[in-house]
Length: 307
Image (cartoon, rainbow, N blue to C red):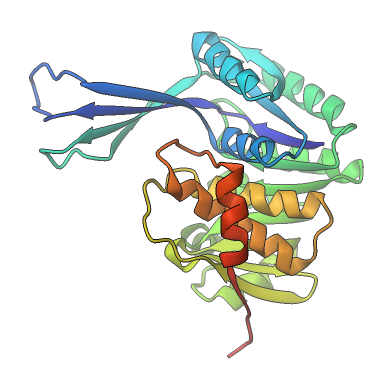
């Protein structure tokens, strides 16, 4: 079983408007809502691919119940802790006539105090026992310690369990004070932490603490370093509908490959195929198994060399 940790889930909302005028009433003509948060996207992708998954999150209010119900409809088990307040909503406004198209507004979400975090750690340790691999993704609610991921990783390391991490900022900096099995960073996060745009230099620095490194560069695809092998994997798409959640789905593909004991090339292949599959439909942060299966043989993989 893969334990997918999403400390700060959300409801991702697409809202269509013909126009947007400041200072006036604006009517939304169409609205769609999806379970959101990086870890939620990871869990949904794994579940769709047939990998047994449990989603762990901090749940709050009616939005939290809605997210859990949406996950249950997809056959996913959910665990976690309840917080006061409401899980956040993240709005993407689509107005054809104005520059507001693809403008995002994000609610603050609930707060987490020290007692809440201690309960979260307890539930994590309970579910860690049944997991073969843990994927931790995204931000934390306000009030959570800056060392939250580091503490979870230390617990996993103490139990001999592998962790794949996808986060940024202070959480990432503190997390890398521990040894981590795997990590996914985009090019901006890698440059911020490693101080370089060079893929090889970033690999060298991160390998001081990390065994498996997945570094993504948008359309350029996935750069993977693991077990002494460095690969570039990418797939060409004729049409891209939405890129929201592509990195999360790519993380899920890498996690699936690791959980099944695949070799480095197959891990890269699944990572690239999962990320690309998310681009093919308007559903935010979701993949379809049929799309992944069609894309897998189309993934181009090349070994990276220095210089």
